[in-house]
Image 1 (tube, helix red, strand yellow):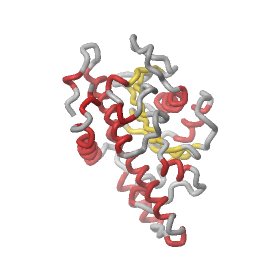
Image 2 (tube, one colour):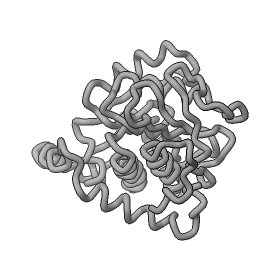
Image 3 (spheres, rainbow, N blue to C red):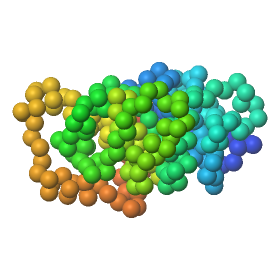
Image 4 (cartoon, one colour):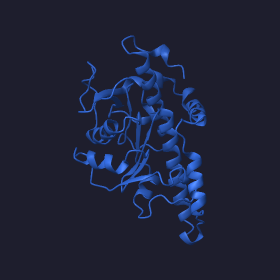
Length: 257
C-alpha cells in the first residue's frame, strides 16, 4: 500500500495511514458483497487519542470510499475538522460505534455489516452454530445483542457495551447483522471475514436439513477455538491483509487519495 505520496500536508502521517487502511477496508467489504448501499459503517480510533475516530461520509457507497472521505468525529458525534461542513455522519452509526470505542479502548477498529447471510443467522434462534472451522473461531467468544429498533436511542449504548462484554471481539446483533472489533484494521478484517463466511456456510449447510449436519464434539470445539486465540496478533492476519489489499490496489488506486 503506497498511500503516503497522496498525504495532505496538514494530515499527520499516523492519521493518514489509518485513513488509508480504513478506506481499503471499506473497499474490501464492497468487494466481498457485504455492503448495504450506504447503511452500515466501519470506524477507527485515531492514534494517540481516546475520543476521536474516523467514520464514513454517509453520502458515499463502500466501493468508492477514499482516505479523504472519512470524517473525523468525537464521541458526541461532532465533526472535528474545519471544512467538513458538507460531510454527513449517520446518527445510528454514531450510536453503535461511539459506544464501543468509548468502552473498549483495546478495539481500534469496529466493523458492522448487514449482509444477507449475517442478517439471516442473526434472525435464527440458534444463532451461530459450531459447524464449520470458520464458526469455531468464535466458539465461546461470541456475544449477542437483542434488537431494539434502529439504533437512534443513545440509551442503547449501555446495553451494547454490556452485551459485548470486556473481552469479546465479535457480536451478532439479533434481527440486524454482525459486528466485530479489532485491535488493528487488519485484525478487524480477519474477524469479519471469518464471521461472514461462517454465516454463509451455516445457511448452505441448513439447506440440506438439520438432520444432515455433523456437530463436532465439545472437546474439539474448545480445542479449535483455543487454537484461534492469541494475545499477540498472529502473523497470518497481517499476511492475509496484505494479500487482500492486492484485490483493490491495482484497479482502485484512488482509495489512497
